[in-house]
Image (cartoon, rainbow, N blue to C red):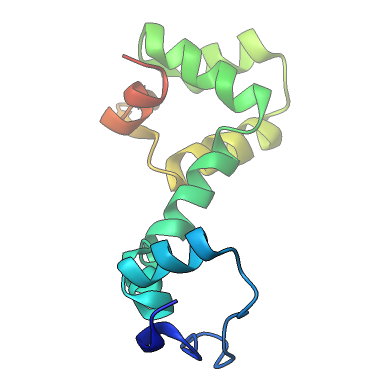
Length: 127
């Protein structure tokens, strides 16, 4: 392993990485700039948090069913509730998770809120 990579420390841990790693891993790590180079190639923490929120939003069958319904057409809460057969509070929670993840939007139309997919929501359905 080149001397420039030996004893290198991580800015996150301030501990040297293991010197006993396989040679091919060590060589590859050095070619990308060592630990610091690897850390610089990682997505920013905010982006990872966004991915995590998106995956949590997609991890529930009820939310996936809501997305599938909205993939067919925009709907009001009363239709979504009738199809799912769940309580208002539970539906409100699931809609909130989907909205927070940026997968759906709700637009006021008179006395109704009409929910529809965002571009990202449509992408999650492969549309």
